Image 1 (cartoon, rainbow over the protein chains, first blue to last red):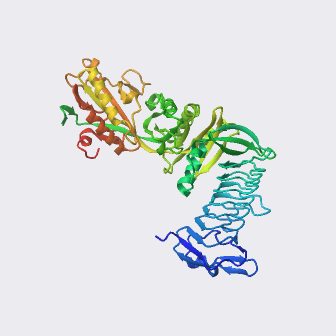
Image 2: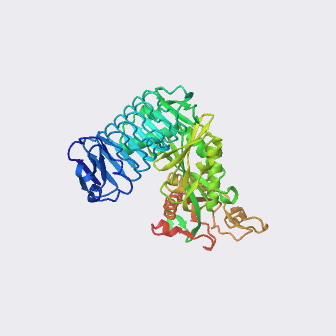
Image 3: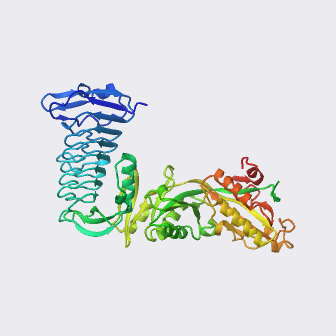
Length: 255
Length: 300
């Protein structure tokens, strides 16, 4: 068993690169050779093959691991709808844009608008699971419709901007105006958060659904969920009242 | 065949195919889980009068439940597929939704045949309910005065077996009861089986139909009633003055056979004359549990 494909960056990306077409369906059954033919668009040089930038090895098993400094890689995992993608490092902007299924596990930081809708579009993520083990830039999960976005460290401002539904879990500090204009989305804040003024405090309670969600993050992704997050209470804020008002911010509070 | 002096009759228990769901109820502590489980499985001894047969399968430690809280596993069984959904909705809605601190999960997650439960109960939320997809399963969050009730959208449903049984024929009522208690204790918490009657024991075993009334689907099993020995075609050996029945339902026939073996062995004690079983000549139920084969460790 090979553990899927492994793509190792040959040399640091010299300029910003658009990876938006690399992991669109179908890719999960691709061989290393087929995957090497996927297109990447470099800012100045234009179109190149993925194989020109990466050494790709392994067998297709619905999994791919990308290794190297990908901070200049934008829109990595855009439109992903199948398989498991792991990025060993940080990524540029709009990673997991409009993610629809499968999982994208970014083991470093993510730039602005991770898991967000393409600019000008109404819907962001419509499914799948997007894990950022570092911090995320502004407007992560913007216009999300379904799915789960997890940010293991701090989240930038306006995280979950205009969420239609779905869930964003932030382990660290959540940036200013997180949850703004959310319709039905859930923001789970295990660290510090200041809900927007358009959210209203409802109650402090223990949502059982979070036990399931956090257990999954711990078991499936190995995220270090502390016992106090399972057993603690959460302040529930309803909002955004400037929108539908059926969304929520669940802020963990010590007992 | 004798076990510790108790005669094992050469007969079989006749059982039926039923539909079964496994419900996992969790709660803040053992007290409230038990309160919900007892209500959920109340008045559910026989489909004849209760529409459903239910019982506690076993208690679950917090490490075995979806939400990491103490839980109890319950089996609910009906004769028909459509019935099961209705019974789950009305029972979970009236007994678990109402019980403080509890949540309710599907205990057969890998079964493809599924029935909507949370999808119906959500309407209690009057539009304020919301759902979350976790690991491909949808869970409904229904706002209640206490906080929030969490229930899984769909529950697995499979073909199970109902009506496994054996009869304890004893010299006295005390001896029959002691043997029945020992049998029920030995079968408690065995995976895949429930004993739907009070304490797992039935004192009023029935026969199909009635001598007097055409509308009765079941009436007293006069052949095994000691007080009728002189006025009916009795099935009781000499010296038998009391009979108790153990009824076992399960997720499959092997689970029932395993439980019967354990229960019969425990029931073979002082004061017990024989172990028998209830059947209808093998014409009604497709599952036949032959007592001697079970006790010899062979196929039922």
